[in-house]
Length: 95
Image (cartoon, rainbow, N blue to C red; front, side, top):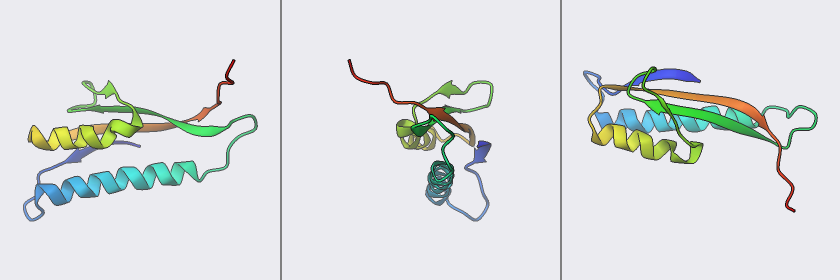
């Protein structure tokens, strides 16, 4: 998912738009995790970026995505960019 979300709408209030963005992110992650794992892969991992624009996007952990969205709402940004890409993950064995 590579998408720029806008928080400006003539009829819909900002908190409602923020909830819709968070819902889209959750749905995407859930959909990606349901996909069949390739051979030798333990789980789906995600590369995530968040920023005011695509060029200014910084790497963010998936667990902190909601905090980043809330921060964008507090800063009253008109729009922001989210990038979430699934990648195969392999668990490291403990020594």
